[in-house]
Image (cartoon, rainbow, N blue to C red; front, side):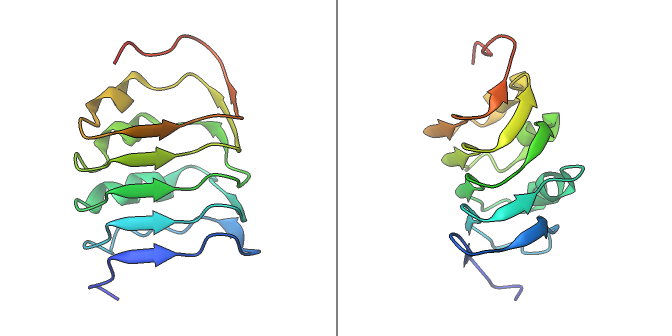
Length: 120
């Protein structure tokens, strides 16, 4: 599946930890929303830093919990849409999210975030 560009597994009954998908170097769209997926130690997010073509990442409507790691700022600079809404994410929004210079949509609604909103 090394040539895979779009992976849409949204709105299923998938459970467990989101796997590391960083070996999918050509991945541009990853849609995993509306399942029952967990983050565990957020290793999946760190692995996605290898996906330099990633434009859309949607993991909304799952049961991801804990704090969003600073590695979110190391995702593709081409990333345009990032959706983590309707999960159980807590803590601050990492300032590193400001490094996503192409980001046009950031959905973090309906979580348990606290602290200040990063300036950029």
